[in-house]
Image (cartoon, rainbow over all chains, first blue to last red; front, side, top):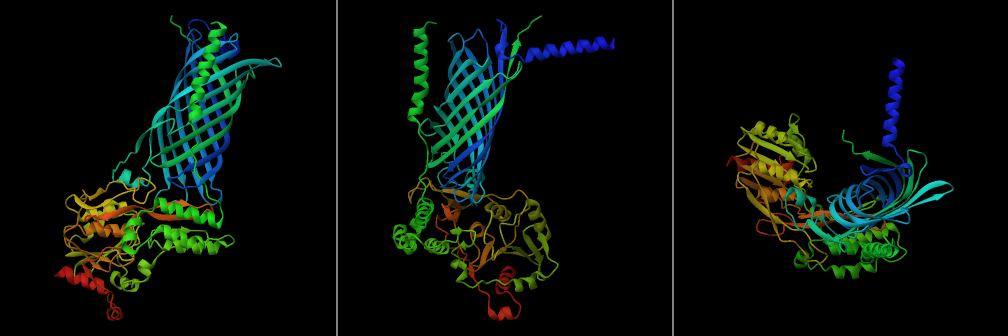
Length: 276
Length: 343
């Protein structure tokens, strides 16, 4: 009896395992299936910071990123839904190496893409738009009354993705490039010489919520990656993430250029819509 | 989908993506060289674009920042060492006559302190020790006791030392049977404005206009926001209803100067001592190419007549510490305040 239960458990676990860890190149979706691609990546690289509210100097140093991406697609539909979450932390110094600035941020992107499949389904082109929300800070360890800058923004971003599947040395690879561009948005900013004491203690607002365009806040984001189907159930992704946040509002200039070498795992799930 | 349609799609998608990248550009700031001239230029520009008292000080004593540039540029020449450069830059900043303007390097702290160094201190910690004794109470940043004539005495030496509502409740409760209160803030060089507001709220019985503040909105010397009112609202906790004397000297500066500005608006309060040191610009900081940090006044604050308090606030009664009293172990200002409260 115990052996029978054990065998049943093994079968159940293996079935579930196969159900949720289908590799893309082996998936055979049907009309009722939805494919969800989940990506988790970690990255390290260079960060360059300018924020004239804190200093006229530029700061550069090392930064770390975590990226989570989730994409839902239906093989019978020309639209996909993408959700991305990005967390960054950087520690930077000025050129004299005496002043330190720390930067941290969380970004959330949700978007819809139209899909074109061509070249016998090897090339997938996606064009659409993202809604991006951004929350972060820059902390200057030397400043007194203006030690930090809060960063809060939302932006509509046209976006395009190109993915090309190919085989090399009998291994399956996928080359992917994504470009997210600025259009319009809204952001928080103190006025040129306005203190946070005046905003938050005195409640004096002065153009602190600023509409932005691709001219005043030219934020760009790009990802270039290559996927390698290492095994039956998981795919390795290595790539570059460039997130370039910029703004020129209230006579203040700021930029955070983050360049990251990313590595992570891609998993594709085939979701069956089952109704007994 | 035929090949023609595919090509058309690719062209449209490519154009859609790249027309934005063509019109977007890098947002950047020119950096000065890390040379004596470069650091001089960077400092002059930071002050030129951010300092908030140019017009007022031009009117008061003829400050002309463009003239200052020409005067000091020749001194910031190539080949001078870091100490010499520090001296040049500190001298240039001293032209602003502002205690909130500092240049900080690892080896020195450039400052303009003549607003109190050129005046008598009118304060002696030796005398204060006689008045406080050894059994005085300490509530966070406040030291307090009751004199023999039933006058309460509170000393608040720095608004950098925090005070909570609980501290203030305890102090007022302890002194509530006193006939009057001496609030001594001599040598208080400032700190956190919210502590000054919190303390002033204990002496306020109706929402009171105490002044105005502005901030810069651009790089021009006259680019300011409109003046916004500053109010002190009565504390919802225990409040002091009886007469109060605030003791001041030239070392009362910045947040302490603001506190005196607030207290001058309270009807039961009199200011006794010397003119305050001033410091009515909320300071900001920035950095130079060589890593030195500069602090400067960025947001001007005014009294309720919309007048500057940058160079100090006059007391209601000018009283100085007399040598004779000092020899007798008496603090002239405290004794004057006691008499005033008894009257």
